[in-house]
Image 1 (spheres, rainbow, N blue to C red):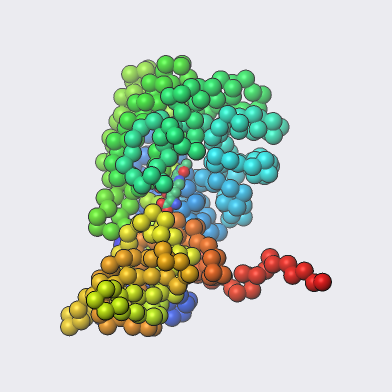
Image 2: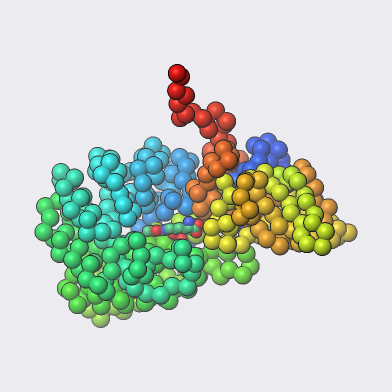
Length: 425
Ligand code: LLP
């Protein structure tokens, strides 16, 4: 992360964080656009060095905005969406519908109709029910993958682990459901079976589950004589929130995964499929910091110190939800003569669990009006933000080589009540 102090003031990609916070207000999510472009290019570079046919499809649930869609277009990315809202954003951003993939375990009739009308390129069918539903709704042939659960173990938080048999997502290759989906699709009029998809989980740092999934899936394909054109391995490539986290090793990891793909394809005398991957977090997470202003600092003598900030679980839910750890640093550099004190950094929402970081070292002198920056907040922060306590969603800015651009304005108070209907008696 290009975050460093210059003359005691925090700079992010060469921009002074205090100035940005003063100008745009806080909470403020600041993205380094160059970092996101670099990540997209790394995925392209590694896949193109091993494969002729591949695509990198950004999981827009991690963070989406019209300007993000622009960036994706410029970097030859494709997009995954999981709702009408994500689809609408991509289309309004001018993204070609043929490069959009529609995921989800419960796509509604309205969503499927909207996606069909827009000409979405690929539907990832999640259940036997969806086979029937999509076939009935489609008036002409559409390309589909099925989402399977390869049944491999992954080492991550249970809430973000998805590829196991007992999951609300996908169909198991172990219990016969995935096979039934292939057979059912084959009998339909409007569904073109193109291949399979799986997403093993999130924040994975080890290529092993991807390698194991390939073995399991290709054995299954071979056992049932199923031919595929597309293999979508999902996303889930881990990032570094704190120094305890291990990033997924993109270059070495794909070397290992794609070597295994070549091995299993050779073993079964098959051509290499078109490989798709769906990174979300690994593109956006480490690209951003969120800046907050400190308010009340409360010391409970001999017990703890609470440093309250002007946001919280409305824009930072990952810590309350998953116990996720983040680095939190002062925007004004701590000088050598000031000691560090362990503090709980807490939000301003009415919930005891509204904690952004427990036992974080912060300068003992921290006081109302100071800014703090929470690192690695580019993925699943803005996109998971809520209006609990009628909090306004934060503003988002991008730092690019051409300067700073606001890409999402702070929500206004009027916007909070714009859908309210007052019934006049
Ligand atoms: N593809 C599919 C089908 C997915 O379900 C997901 C994430 C991705 C790709 C992207 O995964 P990524 O590369 O971003 O890890 N709210 C949770 C994450 C939920 C992710 C769900 N699916 C969090 O904040 O960690």
